[in-house]
Image 1: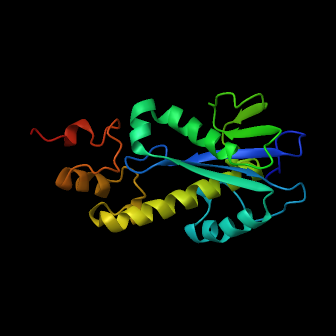
Image 2: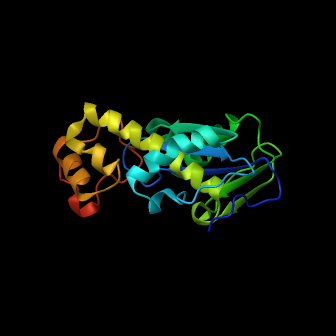
Image 3: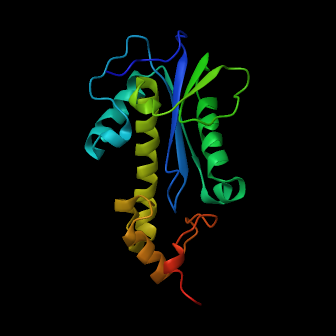
Length: 199
């Protein structure tokens, strides 16, 4: 059973990102403040849930949360500042959208940078421990998936609708065949060394 919050503060937000290990598309983060009486028996880490369950939970979280924010950081910025900094920036920009602002921030993972003077805690696998981080993980994942589905229409040969930009064999074979697009992260190893072609 997941706890609601990590701290004793009523206005605690959970924050998480999606798409950190992808070759294409943004890294997307969400921040969510849940009310103290929030209950949901289905809500869990987004990776543990089916797409159908995530899609059902998204409107519930949006409707029942005190506040939520979602931010995409796109490949040009990821390439410039690196994926770790882009992930933290995405989380901080999502938190900035919250009204009211949180009194405490629970962060999924082990890296974060101070956000103003608000106290925070990094929690490894926090999306499987606290509902507010799990809620953020659902929003980050569903918003990012929707974005990848949209750009799939522009470049269907990479099948982002299915792989969401992750480094699947099919995605890498498409990069070999068609090259990289404006949505690919140029700073990432798009192909393993043994697949690189001598051009």
